[in-house]
Amino acid sequence: MHCIEDKDTVTITYTGKLDDGNVFATVTEQNPLIITMGNSDVPPTLEQALLGMAVGGKKSVRLPPEEGFGPRRKELLHTLNRKTFSKKINPTPGMILSLNVEKDGQQHQVPATVLEVNEETIVVDYNHPLAGHHLTYDLTVTALDKSL
Image (tube, rainbow, N blue to C red; front, side, top):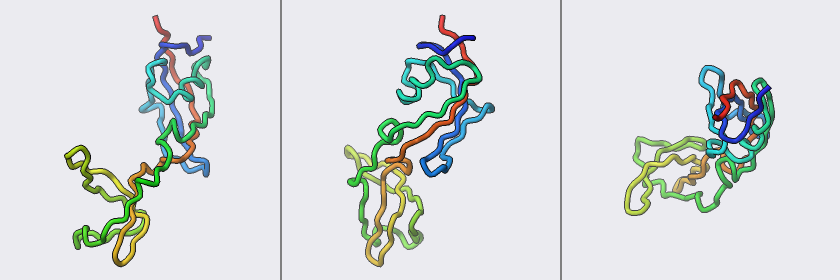
């Protein structure tokens, strides 16, 4: 039985879950993830967990927010004047909007989640929805191509 080592090409499937059990991602055998060990294709904790596994091996790995989508950053919460939105848009909590943001003199469209709606203002969150969450990956090694 061959075990995963540095520089090997590994094919995996996984289910990604939050601590409350909600599934945020599923990678199946029909469209697996193929990684090369040592290339930083996946977070370090996940790569470390794969070392020594063999085809058919299963493991559950929990990643801290820093290795996932980062910590939640308070400075990414913004209160906007409701007048900045066109009459066509009626923002409601939970809605994801594509908003224009200026960075380095250029306009970029970025997603923002509506947190709160008042008569005068709307509070939006530019953090990734998975920021600040620990992520658990239930993974299975489905193929291994040994490095030469």
